[in-house]
Length: 300
Image (cartoon, rainbow, N blue to C red; front, side):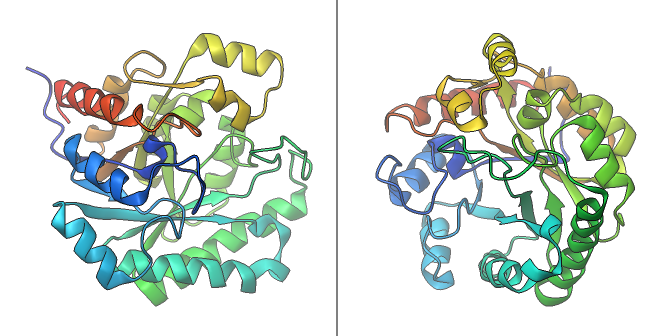
């Protein structure tokens, strides 16, 4: 018998259907995503990029309820390291997503730092290392965001380290966590992105467990990753090469990650995300169904 993972709530996301953008002809239509994620055996979903799913709360509530789905979180992208000048435009975007997230009964807002390298074109947009001043802007901005999102919408922000952003490696993630207030800023640990950037998810959970408020379950293909790192391939093209792979064929092993998360003794969402943009429309459903069966075999 697998161990009981009764504190872990498994879900999926548009990302696992190759969805990265609100509107893109190479992505599956949103109705198909909702139909197939329910068919694959998931009951929780994320909103994905704002505008992909309907943004009218009543309509979206009807669509997810009809398929016996519930929403775990919304997602925003922010560039708060750029300082106070970007606050108003950031809040305009965050407020839209947070309002819909709240209306769906979710409690979390996943916050992803902006990319220093363009996902599609691989253009270098800004230096990959932040200055001391930018680190201060990032940490203070995230604390302000956490406070204001909580006050206005009752949501907890969970910041998501991500490849090709300024929050990527163990050193960067630990620096960020050490510099931010645990009452205002939680962590969304994406096991795939953290491994992609050389991190150890189990060690992070065991060291900073009180900060982990949310999980994304993802694996990387170590052979493809080695080539990506050796040739400094940007994240978008790396995904096109298949660097994010179907569990349990990659790293990190998810069983010890889930066991470490269970030992925290708190309820956690564990949302499956396998980056596949762009992909053939018939590819995601079989993978999603197999992944759900694998996670059941782990006790989740």
